[in-house]
Length: 352
Image (cartoon, rainbow, N blue to C red; front, side, top):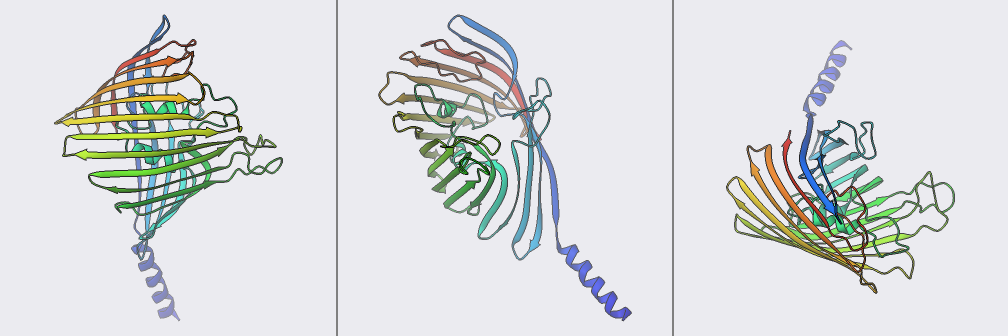
């Protein structure tokens, strides 16, 4: 009997010993001095997120054997200039990402709050990074001259289940569904559907992505949820080790049948010269059946002090046409009809 107990203990002990688990603290702190203006108004301030949004988080993985692993991420946003939390704040909460899942040779399945497939499709072809306020792609979230449009395009979603093919494969598939969870009115309030499919093998990247986001939430459902529909093509080509060209074509529509669709075209370029990296992008947004629209230019320079610390500068100019009032670049006041917005900044980003 004792030998059996000892054998069982040894077997259990060896099984637990085979399970390798790791937990890592990671994050980023980004601050910059920013000068912004529009229509005679101006402001100089210390701000967060000129190169990448400040954050910290925990991520971990456990090897379950047979190529199977358990994974988790808990990530919180921080306004580094004040120390307050973000999304929505001011308390610290893991509202940037909070999910758990399993991964293997077949891909991975996660559940919780995380980035949407469209966000990741954009990120791969955005020289400024989707988490930076100077990314021209923030215009995709504008609703100027689109009456009746539903929610802004979702780049994160809660209550989401997601499948992704394994990293490193040329073929990419990313599918996600977020439950609205409303118990009254329409049960589709707050529902999200999204996906991306593409090819990712150096030097080429090409992806189609879509999202469908409905109005309402589980605590504030609506009887007839209105959906915002976004369809996009993203592409990137690496020209040797220094140059890269990228582009996006985006259509934002839906809402009511009478809601006009907005179309965006974005073209970017980056050049790596030793420790220096130069970036530039132009973006144009037009709304069907309306003279209103925007044209923007963003320029950037990064200098790597180390693998983790970067000094950077940014310039942005966005013109509003036809009496439009869209904004970008962290402008904290709403532009008057037809006024352009300007933003410039010099900052530092440290990753850990």
